[in-house]
Image (tube, rainbow, N blue to C red):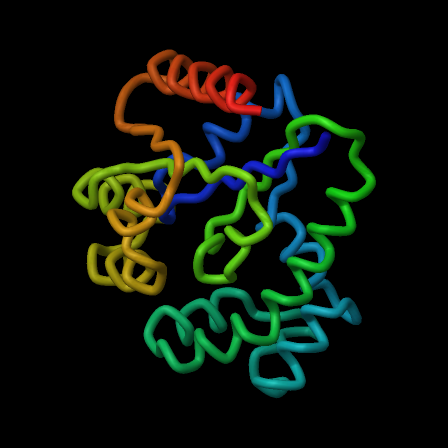
Length: 195
């Protein structure tokens, strides 16, 4: 039997760290990587973005991700439009990849899992949680941005406290790598027992 486990959280909350641990044991499908692949010239997400937003977001024929990010992190209506045209394409590709994987646990790293209603496809959901104070600090350090832009990025996603409430399991990622790994492995064992 195949079971789909969603892994979500906020920007800079530690999802990639958690998924790198999981990937040592189980397949992990990364929605951000799929989005990047399908955003290349001539691919479905690229075509959908150009159709909706025009070629003012292109540089040398490729999508200007920084310009598009600036728009969607400051204009929630534009973000809704972008999500409405890109999420179905990405979810279809995720499901196609899941179908090619043999039975067992399959993990899907999906930052916008709830926003895209992908939780409906999941048997269980893990939320990687980090308090806003630490999240802002990590994001500013990681991307070299100021606090206002970090907050705009954070607020463009569903509130992390809300995601934590909706999830079946929560990993608090503010500790050391080893502390996070222990939480991940404990949760995997719990999921395996709940079959």
